[in-house]
Length: 214
Image (cartoon, rainbow, N blue to C red; front, top):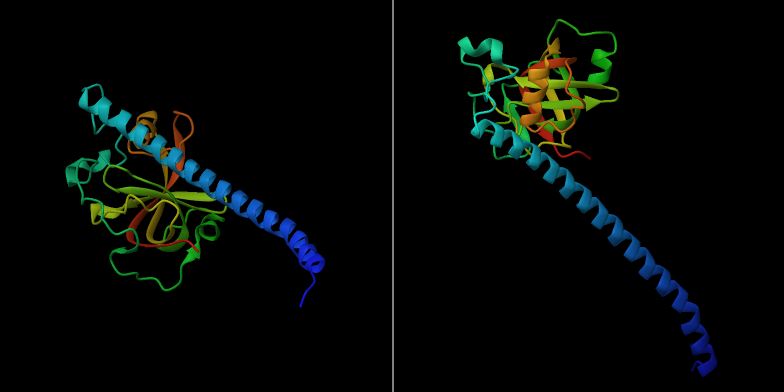
């Protein structure tokens, strides 16, 4: 049978460990709370930007088609007022079956310029159109591309941000006007900095696959 002094010694020795465990748990909880707060702030900012854009359109101060990146193809029925509604599934395969075997990182494909042939690239979804899911931006390394759904054949899940993406299609260097930039911001692209014209890489997609990022 253990003596009382020995039991007291053990109890005192375990007390600091319990306190450390408690502090570690509290620190973990605080970190998770901060992460949740940042996610909420990000979602709120995106919702506010979309709401402001919707209000401008509703008030008649902005033409909903003004600056649409599909504007030059209105005659073919491909514009920001057309296309399929965004799917409810967050992940999965959208569009045609992949024709190419292996996907390459977006940075590897763009490292030596914009290829003219069809490509199959991988990256992470940075932002998605919050109106109909008609575009998304993927990045990988120092490179990014705005993915447009070719002929509005399908739409992209609007909650795809942060997911791993594989995209097949053709690449193009595209000049964006101030009107294009403003329109994309109304669509919910909160990653665009500044209001001036710029060049982007467009990826006209025939197929997209989204999966949870590991």
